[in-house]
Figure 1: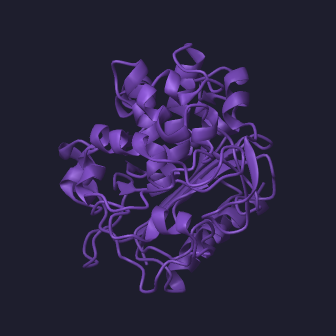
Figure 2 (figure 1 turned 60 degrees about the vertical axis):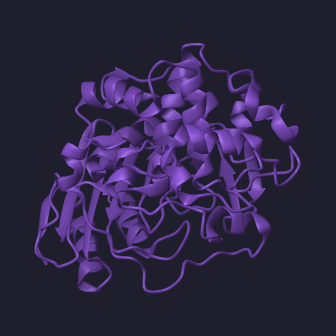
Length: 371
């Protein structure tokens, strides 16, 4: 298997682990990148971007990272908090009055962003095409009653999280969340990551290989059904319309190096390179634990800040303070403020676990052993 890219001196075992994933038949196409502080120390690609196995995955290949998009969107929200346009402790309804329907008037911005809002999905049928019309979908979402009482923990919101985040931005800013990300962060810093992918970039996108087995859901409750298991739980992925839409919870597209660079804001307390994206005090508010415990949708105990996961359990290295997120099929990224290390893994052969992925864990473990 042809592996391209580089690793810094002392990190050769990361390349070996990356190659081993292919040798073991676990990958079709994949990329892994890491920063240590401001230094890019790993940027590897291998395999194929297309299903037929004819187009090599290279440093310009884009791939959707699904829920690994959420902390990047949360970073944009934090910039609006810092500017005084949003307040984590204010009710969502202060900015979006319709959201108060059916007993949600007291739900705060931080609670909604930490999956405590009780809206993991739509229990009753909706037209799946609504997912491609964020204002219309958000209007329907605002009408729902929460599926559990306020203050009784989290239930992961795989898609609806992004519509809440996007609508909050729309209510307080003339620019969309994806536009703010592009204009204020990615374009100035040369970061190849998008929420709302222009059609001019679609030709760079990898083709996905669906898993051969069904995803492994730990719960068989109403919350998990609404989140994942109904015919209307998502719009068709990978279409032109889906790539074009801004879905801040699920359809970020980028390279591993770009995603690792954005997550370095979590490793460096709001800084990306020399650019101060948010102040340390805002970083504290974004990343501090808002809820922890058994989740109604995800397996085991989890902990959330205002849109980013905390490293519970320890699946993104050994440090509990690491901020992270996993994406559908196996992608994932993290920023470790104890070491200044950030990393991202993206692939097109999708797995079945919601949080962990053995391929990704092998790379992260190798990376930490090199420190």
